[in-house]
Structure formats: structure tokens, C-alpha cells
Image (cartoon, rainbow, N blue to C red; front, side):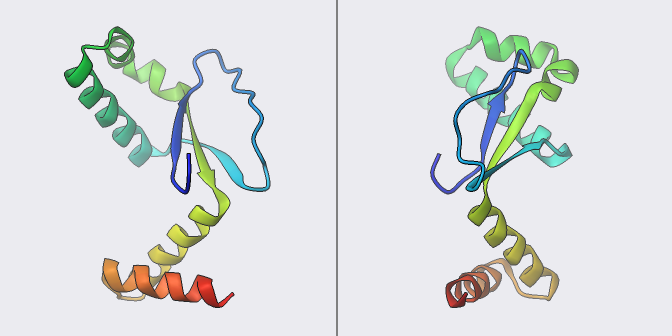
Length: 106
């Protein structure tokens, strides 16, 4: 993972790998994340005929609760800043540029 969000299937609720807690946060999925992960799994099943993917989708109401979201702290800061700029009335491109320049100035 480099600069983006990772979704981890934590099947046995024992997600315990070495990661730098100063650099990333582990979060539960919100409704938007759950929809995105389901869509990604559906695409994967369509492309690969994955048995695991099929099982996840078959029991989605249970399995969806077993996913975690890994977000780099700096990535989260920039996304939050972009959302703030959009709320101030900027379109996505202008919000992205404004957020980039604001973070660069820090």
C-alpha cells in the first residue's frame, strides 16, 4: 500500500501484523466503504470466478462486518482537507489543488 486505502478481510478477528501506528490508522468500514468493497468483490468474482468471493457475497451481511480499513495518516489529512474545500464551494479539481498547496505550505 502506498498512499491509498487498503481494505483487509479480517476473517478470524485476529488482524495483527506489524505496521507503523504513527503512519496509519485502522478503522471500521462505514456504509460507503461497505458498498465499495462489495462492488470490488463483485467485479473480482465476475473476472475470476473466485470461490472465496462468491462465499463472501453469499453471506455479505455477516462477512461485511469482518473488513477493516487501513488509512495512512497523511492521506487521511489530505482527503479531509479536500472535503473541507469542497464544502467551501470549490469543485473537485480546485479543492484538490487548494488542499495540495495548503499541505505543502505546512
